Amino acid sequence: MAIEGPIRVGKSTLARILADRLHGRLLADRTDNPHLGDFYAEKPGGSFRAQLCFLLARYRQLHDLALEHDPRPLICDYLFEKDRIFAALNLADAELKIYEQYYELFRPQLRTPDLVIYLQATPAVLRQRLRKGPAAAMERDISDAYLKAVVDAYEHFFFRYSASDLLVINTTEIDFVERHQDLRELLRRLSEPVKGTQYFLPLGPA
Image (cartoon, rainbow, N blue to C red; front, side, top):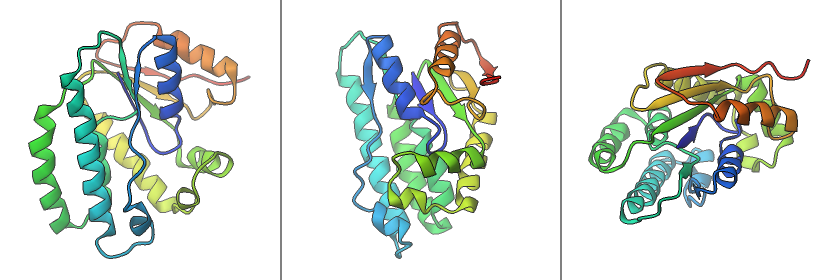
């Protein structure tokens, strides 16, 4: 199972909760990228170095799973395709052509999840969560334009996604991190089967 969505939508939190509830293994995205500072500072080549570092780290992490023989459910707080979404946003055309050669080499070697959970939220809600959450200073400095571009890129990607069963959950009106009732409603829906692409639009508190 993989959980995806834009920054501060709750991917890592939900992955930890599900891993605990399902007695499964948690695979968390790598955050120790030494080139992120150059990326946020918009230094020449910073985006390319950061993106390739993420690509290699995520590939190694997911590829190593093929060597394991652990029957427990695996919950991952990212989808490998996430890397390509951000590469398209962050890289110049010449850089993207080089990146794509590596991506096309790596992707066929990795398993596709049985289920993907796509968490949605509006840019305005994500901005609020960035302000009040434990976000790094670099993340709080993300521009509104870039945040909207990320949300739009995810929407575009998942509109056409068909590689596995997909549950789309709009979290704009709920906060399953802060409100236990919202978490219960979300877990109730996740206990039901998902076939094809299905949508869940919780209304939040009255």
